[in-house]
Image (cartoon, rainbow, N blue to C red):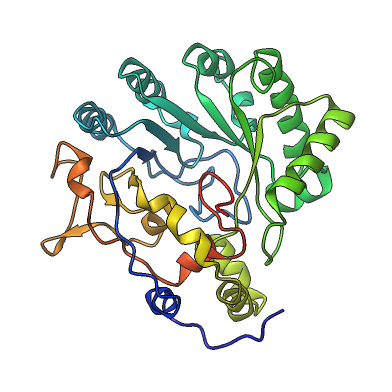
Length: 325
């Protein structure tokens, strides 16, 4: 393992590798964070979501997001996240609107949400609108999932996956991806090898199928950052990320063609910047969905970076779409 050095600024590290500061190209993905309400309270959650949170996108903002989407022809994909996005009362409206506008819809699902009261319609709704599901399953064993997500979550997750498989997800042309997060303060293993292991374990032990595994590095933000500080591991983890900076990941960073809009209507470069209150700024003030009609106006702008960006560039890289290199 490389010897730890003083933690540099992210732009300084880019410069050290003869790379320029990040700028956005043409936005292709509009990520919508509908709030922090969730039926789970995971230890690694960078959103600090949970059952006690109340922050959520209201109808007025949801309608404005759809207006902006309709006037943004470069957007190909709508990525709906939370919290558990399905717990927002305007979730159906956002998915139906994206579908009507012929945009691909991704929903970041924690699987157990389909067992919440009055949510039994969700699996068929996903299928009807051909939603691509990106589902959290931090391990293929119950023990590790329990450490991150609590008792009973693994069993419910497997049951949910079987329901989705029966509807054609992961088995009949409807996209079902799983997400792996490390249990502790280390980098994910190689995505292809881990995907093969997931596939074998879930198929052999539970009869579950899926399309792809996405490995995502735990970001030193919010709840996971608190854990690092409590255990005295914050500096070691940051050194791990910096020491494994991979220049090959920079070209594919999700912030280059993604725009994130928060539940309060502010634009961000990514979901992580949103959690750190680092909005997209123009003329000295934060931009909101009421300041422009077409997100193409954001192309060419500088992307706000900080030390957490090392989480996306360490090792094979990490993004909402998994490994980058």
